[in-house]
Length: 377
Image (cartoon, rainbow, N blue to C red; front, side, top):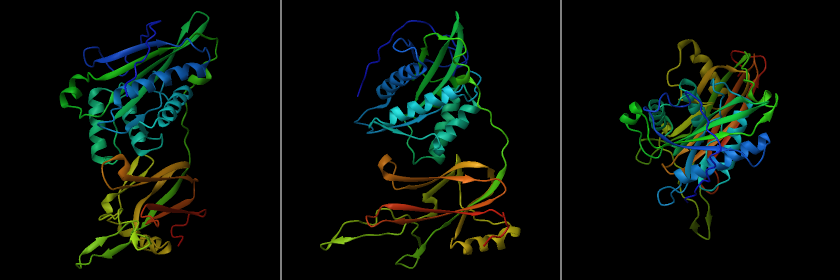
């Protein structure tokens, strides 16, 4: 699917230091567009979304090579790198628009891969070739089950124009379909596309509230412990064999309708994240916690501990991924949003089973101890 974007060259947007330190270090195609269809803020956002969506499809979609484009979309901070309401709205609307297209597989804002991108952009708002190469290597090391073909990042600013103000928006589309070479990491990539947008003039202080930085205040913390039940059977030959997802099948008229397609051979084939932090099962317990940990496991019929630490009060995202293959339709991801309250202990317990058709299902249960006792079970 190839679509040609209409380019309306009505002005020149000059924003120094956005994404690239100098013209010689990184090359990219650039589109400069001015919104003319709608003088409302929503109209300007829609213009940005439409143009970026078309260009994303033009860059990434190739049915013969990939039936879906894995896309990461970051929220757009201001020119100082601060989180603002307008930038969050643009990011959310762009994710929603791309997600409606069947040619895109869009990762949500709270997905571990998206959170990792947010961390990478915070460390390098200019999103240099070196940062992109490191991010791609990290994807292969820790998030190989989530194919990423295109990364979209942006910045928004405002300038005074006569008696009002205008919005400037710069969007960088970075293809990740091919391996980023060490040379590209050092001297800059040449296959990037930069789109620049200028809004109509908005009167007075209309934009002030939309550009106010989002402040993160200190919040109390509560304890979170994540546990699971991993069922282990012995193989027919007598050797150990983990069956993390129990096999199920049904018969109809003597025929087998569901095979053991989600059988997992090792605990390593289960990936867990808390927010953007990858989790690994705790194999070595501190001596002063061994007794309590054994009691935790017996108290909720669990056998594995994944996490035990203080986290900030408020909502958190927990993800579990099962990988059957590298294709987008060969893995399953489960997620849960849990609320943590300061001064309390929460125990998140999960186990994995297959349904009657052989598809994996995640069972999650959160147990809260408002008294925050060291040993509640």
